[in-house]
Image 1 (cartoon, rainbow, N blue to C red):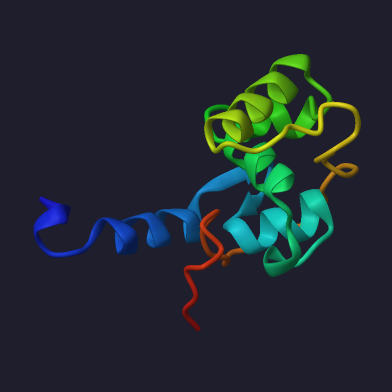
Image 2 (image 1 turned 90 degrees about the horizontal axis):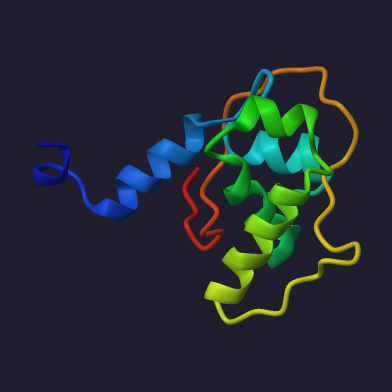
Length: 114
């Protein structure tokens, strides 16, 4: 039903503005800032893949950031995109998060609205 009124790109953008990436971490901007300690425009592909891999179980992976499964899954996302994974220290998630934030845009960082 939603597809009849909005483009898939817009639906994806809205979703990524509100999706949870960890305990009280909402939206791609907040996820980049708190988990990767970078602005979303400066996040590399490895970091984006790591965030995408967290989506099925964001609270679990927020607590288990060095999970081998999370690393393997983010590497497979990079490989599917034709990129070389940085398994040996690439997109590491930073220390525990303490604050909530809402906002952000998609993993497709070319999506930009204000």
